[in-house]
Length: 338
Image 1: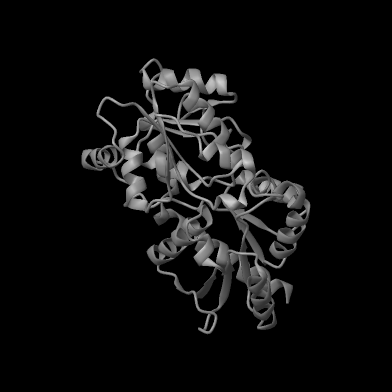
Image 2: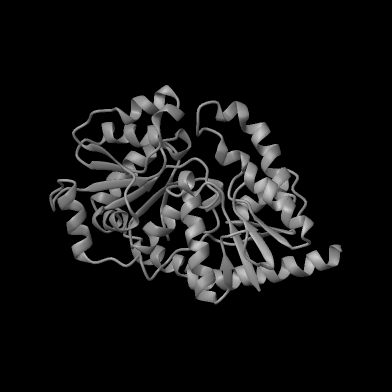
């Protein structure tokens, strides 16, 4: 079987979680020994499509006319589109209709978690939906002291500094306003946010948050994976205050690096990550403030080992076989529909 792994606009999405997910797919397929191409002009037996833009939509119809099975990867939902860009909330109902229309063309739909599968089913998507994690490359996410020292040296931190890090686009959904508020409330600790988005695309409150000047707050922008790995290694706490995710690849990375983790208590993590066992969870900034202090001061037990063990099942060496099974299912369903 040869797969067309199609993704439109990598120039624009390459630095996002979607871009990372697509790179993970390539490595997972390689590890599994599945032949794939990213060029529509090549021969292929099945199309695995990741995007829902105009060219993607036109291409999937060409593939349907060729009589080939389609696996549509549902990386987005209405819920994670809201509270992101300017006018995103107003556009969310139309966005939901569009992505569901696109996804409905798949013989099989993939989505990263059982939670996002439930959202799609509740939205009315009637296609077979298979949850497969975006995965994590455990061979890359391994820590050592040199990585942590390089991170602290680059950003001017001392060995004594206690550092809280987060990763995400500059959007409200990611909890960036809460991150800034907690930096103000906890001046004894250092806060650093990795990730970037053109500020012309976000509301004023986000632009003002990013412009906040505090001695203990840095916005580092987008950095390459190896530099982000250094940060996971050198920081003392990964704080992920996101309000909505379909999975959250950066959380998997932080778990793999053996970080202490504090997340918002949202439905996606209620079954997979247990509060007080794999990660700590909070709901309000008052709870976050107390828990950040408790974790950094050693008043709360370390959960590093349990969190790190939990993510091992999501290694890319396991994801490839799950993709193979999904492809085979799509082929069988496509034959049955003929």
